[in-house]
Amino acid sequence: MRITKRAVDSVSRPAKGYALHWDDELKGFGLRVASAGVKSFILQKRIHGKDHRITLGRYGEITTEQARKDAMAKAGLIASGGDPVADKRRAVLATKTLAEVLADYGEARNAITDRAWKDMAGVLGRYLPDWLKKPVNALTPDMILARHKRIGKATPASANKWGWYLRALHSWPLPKAATPTPRAALA
Image (cartoon, rainbow, N blue to C red; front, side, top):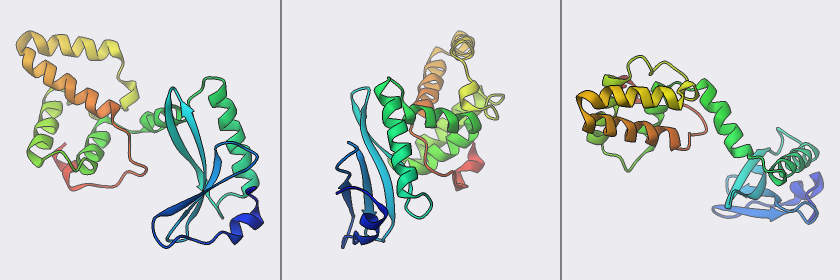
């Protein structure tokens, strides 16, 4: 099917989960229809050897023409070696402080126990009190290495634990929206 306003309006919602409808003309451009009735435009492309499904916007908030133009622009960026997923992550990290990321991580990680999370918050709070209010992307490799060396002189095991926790936060995919968490008070 060619994704047009008429086609999107005529698509019915599935009984459960979601259904994907792909455009016949633009490879990777599609429509995701949720059982709740929400219709969103998507672009699915392979970036650096890994499949990514990028949500372009909800139907109603953007038009089919806007979604198609955005999909073509992102597909062109990907074809030329760009990574819109990483670009979006960098933009979010420009505004998120380390304390906010720590709070989000603690709330979203169901697999991490309260004890482990308290240890993580404690270690980072003990060795990084001055960094907790800085944006995550403001932390440079030189800053991290210098702090690791300084901590490692006194306690090498703590320096390694601190580095592991910092790396876990930095490589963790951020949630779509930041929400206040009960664990935020511990950070």
